[in-house]
Image 1 (cartoon, helix red, strand yellow):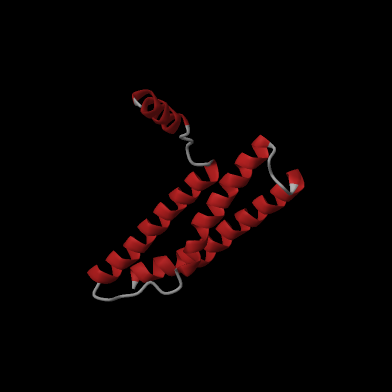
Image 2 (tube, one colour):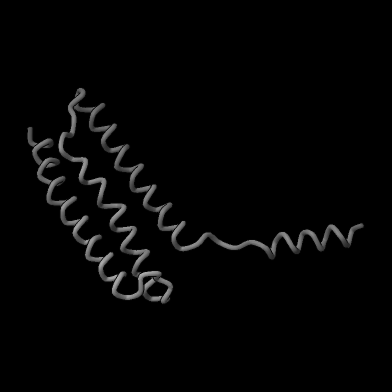
Length: 115
């Protein structure tokens, strides 16, 4: 009876496997989104109800950066379904998303702080 419990304990300890790279990257992306939402909430609370109009494109940046990191990781490991050409095309799309997110969101954020 005692041996069977020891065997079960060893099997449970040996069966642990850490989360995949994609899951960890998604978790960090979630943390960034929560920080962004907390910033917006605190800004609204401490400025008497002022809003941040036009800053929604900034929410495109974390997902594009996370997707680019996952694509680069898969390119290095050779596990990208679209191959190298698909990976490069996806990276170009991610760079475009970051560029447009910054180009549309930062001026609106600056004007919200200024006025």
